[in-house]
Image 1: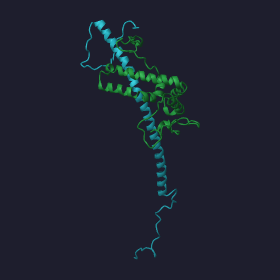
Image 2 (image 1 turned 180 degrees about the horizontal axis):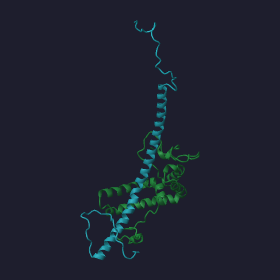
Image 3 (image 1 turned 90 degrees about the vertical axis):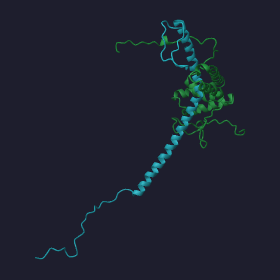
Image 4 (image 1 turned 45 degrees about the vertical axis):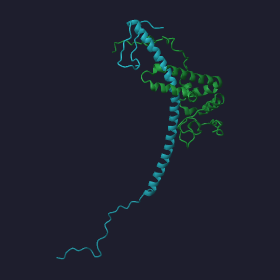
Length: 119
Length: 171
């Protein structure tokens, strides 16, 4: 019995590749394009950030110039209240009790409310 | 908690006792935030030394600076008052325009450049105080002199020129 042999000249090529057209730009072009867009964006972003930094610096300096003034006013008010508190305590209790174990001035957390509105 | 009545005791928390006579009186500045912000750089220009004295005193007296630094504090307040009074005397119109602009623009200094330049010019000519923002990069225009600003809501119209005092000849 004769054996099956390949046809003369060999088999036809099997088409295993899909024959689709490659659409769009070449990868290198795409990469370049994305790179260009990103560069532009970063450029604008950096300009914007630098400008914001300068705004912030200006604001900080305006506040630096004002802080001593605001703090001085606040301190004067605190001293006034402290002296008034001490005087009131002396009047009510007869002596000033040292409340904290330190010589630092402690900003009062609680305020004693007088029975009658102090005028 | 719901049964608890709300207690508003702010009115009894007022303590109106004045300072004792041993501490000299000083008139407070009495300006609100927008005028203060508008005048901040001029206050800084004239009162730098007093401000630094006060802050140094506060640093050197931790915990009792409130009492030790009253004298320096009075100087600071007096100096700032003098600046605001002088601006009011000679540049009231520009000053008002600028701080009202600040009030209307969320206290953002860069929204009010045209008004600010007019104020800077007037203040420089009358009080010889100049606005300087320290520590800026050398290779760019100082922020307060830029004619193009990315974040400003309104473009700077023609006819508004930044004010730069001419003293390049002396320095």
